Length: 463
Image (cartoon, rainbow, N blue to C red; front, top):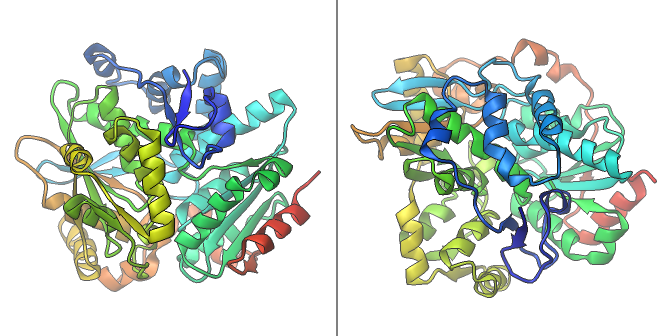
């Protein structure tokens, strides 16, 4: 299995190389050269197996000879051993033909744990085997950072630096990043929004002297391994509702497009997905792009669903690469326009192909709060505001014939203020995190200046 860049000018890599590299040297994102297929029988055979076994079967074709079967199965087992639910990703019925996929039973109570816990295991195994050490730098709108720190804290072969927008994440999200005591993790509060954090990370990857000097690696959703791990729960949830013998649909609350792109990969692999619905909050650039064909940034407005407060959705580049017939130069031109002009126009042909794959919708702040309130009143399920965005948009796309699965992306206790405002009670943290508010915090506030951030990283990494 080989991996190529969405901009067409970077070296072709193995899975291991792509995983450890993150962003391609031409600024693009790595994608598989071909998409492995699962037959009707292969998908049907996932019924009744453990989540770990399903993960092995779905991901194995993508990793080539990076790990043996025994090694890979062992890494998967370690990755999910710390989850708080034996089903790992259980389904809960919200209404007629509508189901919530609870993806928040991992160590940091968010869907990012499914990928990050596995990446942590794969990185450590690969680096130790090769006698290497890397510096991981990531940007987060809240959940990626805590999941990355949890996955890599205390590991010998990795230093981790996470940039998050100062004052724009929830208190629980912040504390999950700032309270670990291991000296290989560093929480950096950037003066700016998430797009500034993400831009700084990309600029560091494109500074090759710095990149090579600190052996930079990335675990944002720019990393293909992140997307791959998220493909699994599309299969497990769909099979639970009758796939491949009948189609299913998914609604995905998303800001950076990574989670719904994983659904697209599942569809490409053969999973019978009828609809893939992009759900956005008031920062609705993805919805606007699919509606109008113009991907035009308009600035970020803080919301009660802060992990979706994004205007530059990195993984949308991967989708564009496919709908432009894998023309790397066309994608590179549009990404340059995004950086220099603040947006670009999607060609009519590419837009029609996107619309054949994805539907979309948006939820306002009031609609999000009302959905949290309504779901609690009618089902007893307490939704985080991101999941509520998904549920609201899903309700506009449910059909009588096809089950709709909405991805529940985070535990409500990660956003207690928004939930309490909606239902009048404050969601509690799981027992294992009961003392989170009592732990000492450790973070560094940094200016939105690339040189300052790079100097700090160089000072703190271990030899």
